[in-house]
Image 1 (tube, rainbow, N blue to C red):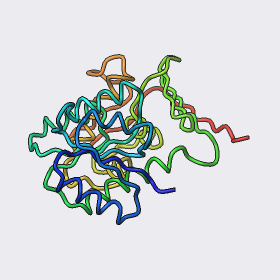
Image 2: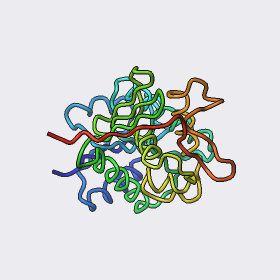
Image 3: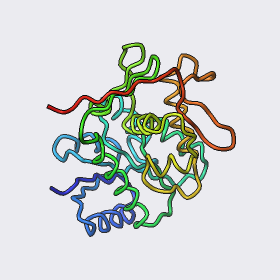
Image 4: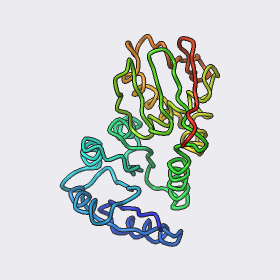
Length: 240
């Protein structure tokens, strides 16, 4: 079946350009032109991904993103913005967007970003058994996509989970921001590595006792990050 993409942009020229290129690439595409219309399309269309403009009538992109995540809807979101300020872009990420692009953009680059997201979501969970990463108080269940701290479930966004799982799989290894972009987002982010820092910050807020003095996700100055912590045990439960 074709992957379904919902395009949300109030500029007809932009939405038509995106629709044309995505359909040419083999996707099933629907377009709406305001934020409220997104929620009218969720049940009848059931999008696999949403391309969401930041500045929209009735309900802006941040509000849409926030409401989707409040409803525990984990559909991947690529946010589009004409704003150049990195703070505005990070606001989108803070509210649950998986990626962002600044207008004007290349339709081919947007397509590559979307394909990267689909590759990552299809690659998880892994095959050949359920790996359980146990690191001190932290437990990550790869197959179930669940995270627990002290036995209590932690609510992560899909991208936060993928980032944490990637760190678990490379536990103790120092990973540069570019390596994390390539491994988790499946592309090189044109040198803008702030997206990694934002997601690391969110993870620390959710899994650390004190995000300012982390015991798990450590910053390696001028290099990147590594997952540390008490002695770990990993087990594999073979699928029945």
